[in-house]
Length: 68
Image (cartoon, rainbow, N blue to C red; front, side, top):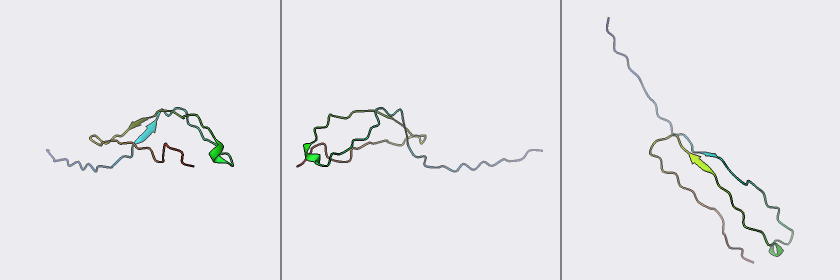
């Protein structure tokens, strides 16, 4: 006997995943933070998202300029 089969596919918005991070570090602030001379901090990471067609964007929060 022939029977119809119905499939229901429910989509989900998968969150992006950060991987391959380099140089994770914490900076300890001195009591007199204006006297600090911190070297630049660099690093990298990879981002992937299972959702086809999603546009991934990144941003830096904070100011690259020290204000006294």
